[in-house]
Image 1: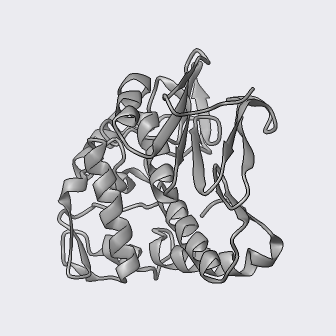
Image 2 (image 1 turned 180 degrees about the horizontal axis):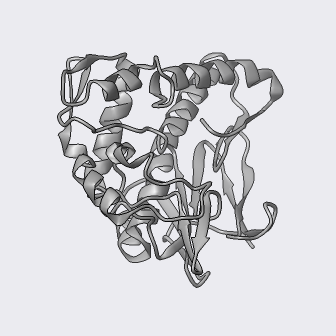
Image 3 (image 1 turned 30 degrees about the horizontal axis):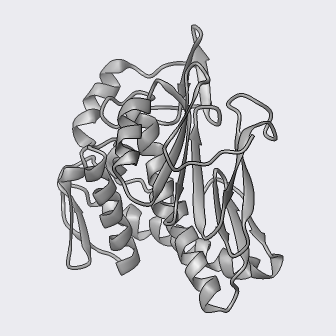
Length: 281
C-alpha cells in the first residue's frame, strides 16, 4: 500500500499484517493476479466475479463518489500512467483530455458479486480508500481477539482504539515532526491528505498527486485536509474528496455530514476547522 504500517502494542502486529496483506491481495490494482486487476483487464468486455469484500469496497467507493459529486472517484485510475511524480515535466493536455471520458464512477456496475466497467480503458483504483478498509478490518479483528487498546499508523492515517491518543497534524512543508497542533482521538480514525508527499514543480507551480477526477489535473486551493471519523474508510476517502472540493464546498459538506469533522489548511496557510474539530496548540 505504499507505506509502512506501525502497530502498538507490537504483539498485535502479526494480526494486523495478515489483514493488510489480505486486503492488498484483493484490492491492489498493481498486482497482476489480484481480483481488481482482473476487473480492470475486462473493462468494456465482461463482468468479473469478485470476492464479497472487494464488491463491498467498490460499492462504498461509489457511494462516496455520489455523495461528493465525483470529487472522490475510484475510476481515476484511467489516468494512473499519465502523471509521473518522479519526473519534472507536465503531461500533454491532450493526453489528459483523451482519458477524461473514462473517469466516471457512474459507469461501474456492481451486482450479484460481480463488477463490470462499461467502457474499454476504464480502471478502478482503490488507493484512496483501501488503507481505511484494512484499518477497519484490523480493528474488528483485534477486538474479536480480545485486544481492546491499540493504535495503528498507516501513512497519513491513525486509528486509535481504547486509550486516548494525541495525534499531531503536520505543518505543510515543515519537518515531519513540526505540527500546527494536536488532536485527541479515541475509538476513531484520523486521516490527512497533503500536497507535500508526492509532487514536482514547474515554473514555480506545484503539481502533486491528489488529482481532481473531474479535470485530470492536481486539485488546487488547499495544502492539506485532515478528517476525523469513526469509520477509517470514510476518513481515508473523504480526506481526498475534501481536498478536491476545497475549503468552502468541503466545509459545507462536513457540517452537513454526521460523525465527520475536518480541518483544512489553505494555500495561504490559514487553518479552517469544522464546528466539532478540537485542536490543541
